[in-house]
Length: 151
Length: 311
Image (cartoon, rainbow over the protein chains, first blue to last red):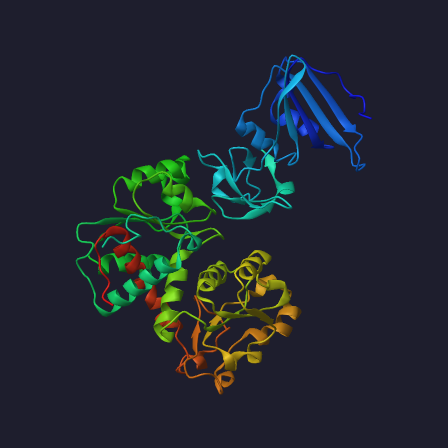
């Protein structure tokens, strides 16, 4: 039996599902959804089969381009994005981890030249299992958990 | 035939393929045998040391002058607009590079050379960026190994001392992993080769082993690459207790291979006793001299499309 939807359906916009618990609020902040006037419904720590919980975001009148969808992978590598029109899912896709992230993260190495100069940071995905990224400039590699997002 | 390094940047040893490295070494060998005093005639090379250096700067500037080029630049960052007026490195590079045909730089921050290469069309050569890369040191090390062993393939090479913080040994091990060498890492546990280098060697199926003293392996070696264990990384008692395992003296070289050469990026303090200097195995001073030829080779290849190394 299909479980009843735990949050209200939307007419037109996007539903981001399968976000790991605790990441939903970070995604809202990262994409500056906290500053939009669009209607947003958020589910935090929703029940899952594996018991680990998930977050879910529904946002009206907003669609993700490929670059934004890829950036979602930084927070939710297994997330799915549902595009909704007239209350129907017209497109559903899983986010893909891109080969690099440009202008999204600050280098954890405080002596990296990228902090002081007019350049965008760039990191290459070095390992996917436990996400590890290598800085284009200082060439050092770091696990995802050591990064801060740029404002 | 065009050379594949013409107008390229030399930022990180990992950017160079095995054939690139072989071309550079053959060119260094050729220039050592047959000087080319007019190859860079009318070329101006910027030599910009945002951080002080002795051997790297002097050997680079010697290399330019031995090829007939001229040098502009500075030997420390303190008096530059960058330091005094807050100019960005990007702006400094744009201006200085507009005066020159190639840009050689050392900088205290990691990634500085890569960044510089994005703000100019002329070739940038990294003379050391913080703790990251020092590719011209690696090239002179490779050239010295090639010169003394007539090959880079399948050699037994030991690295001794501070393998954790020494960028020299990291880059050299990465480069030599293209040539299927066997590595022996000899260091205090606290200064062992970092995990990311070990991971790279495993990915490439390179044979390596860890040891706690030079004498365990010295008789099997073709190259013994010494570095200094810095006293300040240990407390005094601990340092006195363990330092002897990482010091080399002539009496330890009684049964070594005839072709063994002892190398060191210099400066040395006491990790190579001066009685080693008089043995046929000491090659660290010739190694430092080879820095001029390795840097000449880079300049020749970056700035002369049709330069042909004599085989």
